[in-house]
Structure formats: structure tokens, C-alpha cells
Length: 303
Image (cartoon, rainbow, N blue to C red):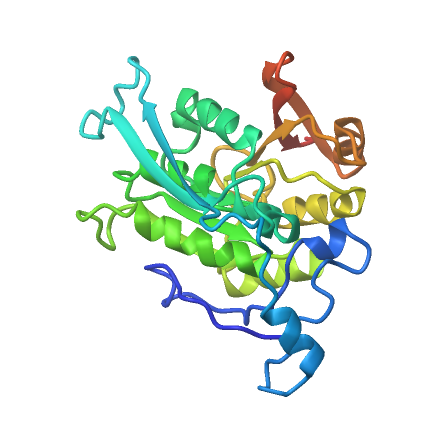
């Protein structure tokens, strides 16, 4: 089913790809939790479906939403941009972790690794300045929004925040607008929100029609590994969209930064790293919290 969503500023001038209705339960659960996405869309009179629509769960939280508030302090040795705010305040609206909606779309709440990746970002602001940045599987968008706000005065920077889940995209776009300063204009730190379902074919289309055949200097992601079936499409996407060392641009190849948190899912970090190697990447563990079970890796093309 095709759908139309509100676009963030600076998107209209670029190419478009028609977005599709898709939620990530379709790969986490056999058959998906949403069995028929088109039910009652045509105003039909299916009595059984109508009854389901009006069933009231007496135990359902009447207010399943939560505002997550963050304040990130710039490092004291960050003297490259003295005009930037010393602290970055971000508000993210999403569902509480125990909300029913999260079972269908994991991107509708925040997970542990996203906050941990934020700390890495603030410690490595030089990596993001004047770069083209892409976030994969952004969910509510915390890491991409931080990347955007932390380099807002870098006019050569551009941030594209993506998710494949169409439900998550609605909230992602709302969160970008929620964190847009009144002083923002078209000359300061571009940001856009796009749908990107991983895989070689979809990534090649994204590169051509959305990215204008310009690959990304930095790709970031957190808490994106929850099923073995997504690992190969993930690396096909990174291979397609990350700048290679031999593409003729200055500064060498790009870097993919991924935060991984230990969770009760049927896929291990060892599998992810093994597939990274098979797909031509080298990796380095750059930040870790063994007690919490969270790690940040940098991946680069093998030269």
C-alpha cells in the first residue's frame, strides 16, 4: 500500500521515491503482526473487522506516549565552533517501551544503544563536521537529530535520517520539527527524513534518486540488529551508500559507526562482524560498556 507523508524542510528540491506501508514486525515475526494492512481502507462493511476496530482493552495505557529529554554538553576542548551552543537540548516524543505499538514497530521508542551512541558522537564531533551523514534504522531519530543539531553551523554538512518502517517515519519527522530552532534557515545544516528499506536494489535507487549519486562520509546506526535476516541487507546498503577510499574524493573512504546492545534476540554481534568481513570491511571497537553490554564499532572499507 502506498502512502504519502509530510516531508521535512529541504526535501522538496531533491528526487523522490514513493513510500510504502511497511512495519518491521514483518521480519521479526513469521507473517508479521499486521496481517492485512488494507483492511477497511475502502470503507467496506466487514463486520468481523469492524468489531476488532471497536474492541477496548481495559488494561491498555490511556497515555502510551512519553517525552524523552536529553541535554548533551560539548567537550571543553571543542574550540572549532565557538559560536555553537555549549549544550544541545533535544526532545524526542515516542511510545513507552511497554506500549503495544512497539511490538509492531520497534522504532517507536528509544533503546539503550542510541543514548550510548550519542556519547560517542559528542566525543567525536570532528568526525561529523562538514560531512554528508546518513542514519540507518533511525526510529525516533535521536542520533540523527543530534548529528544535525551538533553541527548546525557547518554549512557544508548534510544529514539524512532514514527508517524503513512507515509508522516510525511519521514520528521521526515530527521529532525533527520538534527540535528545529526558530533560527534555522535553508543555509544552515540541511536535514531530511526518508524511507529506506535495506537491500542492494533499494539502496541503489536511493543513491540515484535521493542522494544524487553522492555517497555518504559517515553512516550511523544504533540498536538495529534484531533478526539474522536483516544482516546481509544491512551490509548491502552500507556497501552501496558509504563513500569508498578509491572514489576520487579527498579524505579517503567513509566510516560506518554502529552501536550494538546485547539483547535477547536470535542474532549475535559475532555474526554481524563476520558478515562485515565477508563484505569487505574492517572494524574497530571504539567504545564499550561491558557491564551494560553495549559496544560501538567503526567499520571502514578494506583498502
